[in-house]
Length: 327
Image 1 (cartoon, rainbow, N blue to C red):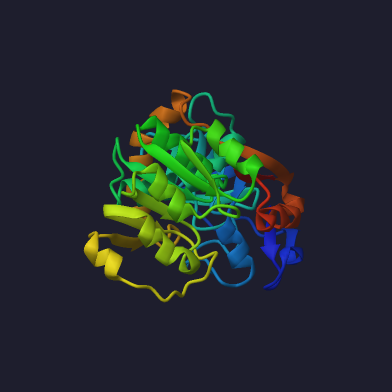
Image 2 (image 1 turned 135 degrees about the vertical axis):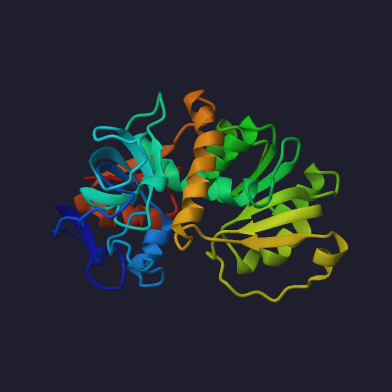
């Protein structure tokens, strides 16, 4: 089969589509998926640099989500899955290929009304957002929610699901075009972080109280300002370190306002934990997608051979929504 190989650590040019060995024999509870499309995620660019290696036993090829068709079943796969089923899947790696092995617990049925290609842009964002701000931070209807990077794949999904659940949504983004896209998806308060102080704007819009939950992909450089933006019992969930992993912070606000700081990734979790998240996503998010309340926002698709171009676009941060690869 063809797959994208990281030939060495470095820039996008180290990605090469090559003929490689077919995936290994299916183990218990695994299925083989013929890939229709794969989502490109920022974590893939970190893996390319050698900073986000695949977990033990995972495919060496990048790609944390895909859509496609089940072409073979291993032993003891739940009876709901059959050869020929159209699915999308959360992966530990291997999405940038023509075929990939998937634990059955990480499969999701193709949602009605979504094309097989576009569905590749759903698993990683849905599982990340649901497992963090909903399953862990318990973001609830009537609360307020600040999303940094509102125009990213995660941001565009988070806006839609939060609005669907009756939550007031604040976003930051770095251009008027990105802010307009966020507004179009339902964001209530759109803040240009290049021209405005998001802490001041949040305070202004909440009568000085602050928001209930923040989803943050920046990390260190935003930590103190995020704490200042939270209200009493506020929860900060960190999912990335685009602004560095270190910060000097005054913790007084944490004590005074009973704040919680949380952080987690998805890739390194156990199979059982991933299966639980996927099951919760199917139960809570899939009905909203089928009802047309939440849609995948796809910015651009590239053929597998142009994975380097897809990574250049991802790292330029000029996109709005998801970038996909098509084998």
